[in-house]
Length: 410
Ligand code: MLT
Image 1 (cartoon, helix red, strand yellow):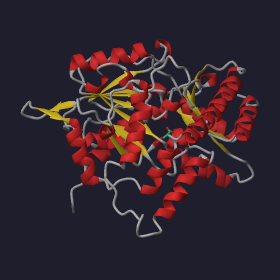
Image 2: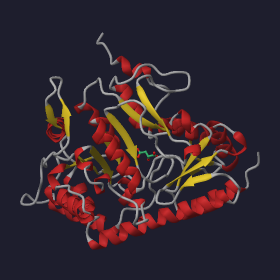
Image 3: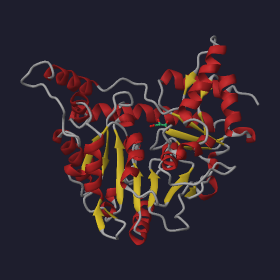
Image 4: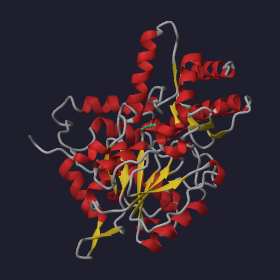
């Protein structure tokens, strides 16, 4: 028998969202009379913007004739998309990012996990708690941790607790670390980072030789002009940070799949012999060996997001989900429950009422209100006693969910 990667055996229960899906399916099967409203996984509900659809239709037509047909594309992505991203998302905001520092991919979830390929299995990693579970699980799979303890923390990870008591500010690591995962606007808490916060992190990384893995999948939800949307708005960040971006929550691509990762050429890591090695070179090698690129049709759709019409439509989409978030926040606050996020972010983070555990509240919400959310403890031990609601839904469902939540009794 072939020997397996034993690190997988350290993982706790199944991946959070399929686990929730299983419980909800079991409930739905046993109670078919109830209409369930799903506010668990942050999955978009509104159709793709018309300009994106038109661009994809045109690209499908190109595939129909020999003259315009495309086979394998460049693994890193087509120039038309990389250039649009570099100009619009970075250079127009003063960020020193060039098109060839952008790698188009099929999702930030994969990118956040795959990036570990280019780092040693000895790296020391700092991860916030609560956190998007992919960061933790992929580090466990990569062998960067020891076993899990009774509280659900893996040995070897430097946890950065993000608590109500400290205003959900991410504390700096107590020990030097090689990799630091940061996510703003934050999944799950919906908190955002000010320029000062990001400056502090960039300074920390410069002083300690750390690399920041900056997940900006929700940057499009930032409407406050004072808040940075990219870590590269901070001078020096291109020497210490890799940024992850996605079209999933920006333009409704969760099922269409297109994202990108920015690996600046100024970024370096250290080889076993102490030599400085370009991370861009390593990632380029990894990407072209293990990935064949995102389909041409999809990349044409993504590029359409950057046209004036695409921008206007995407802005409308984001406004729509942000209004959902505002309604949810207002409806929940009326109950006197403590509720965070939901402003410049599509997630709301609530303190569970009546001192319930996260999973107890999950059950109450499902069984009494037939509303699905995500238990905070699924994002890490410090999420216990909290609960995440996603604003990605139809307006009708959001309004209905609020009235059902307001009718809950304990
Ligand atoms: C979430 O609900 O946390 C996200 O939708 C998960 C993801 O983007 O992979």
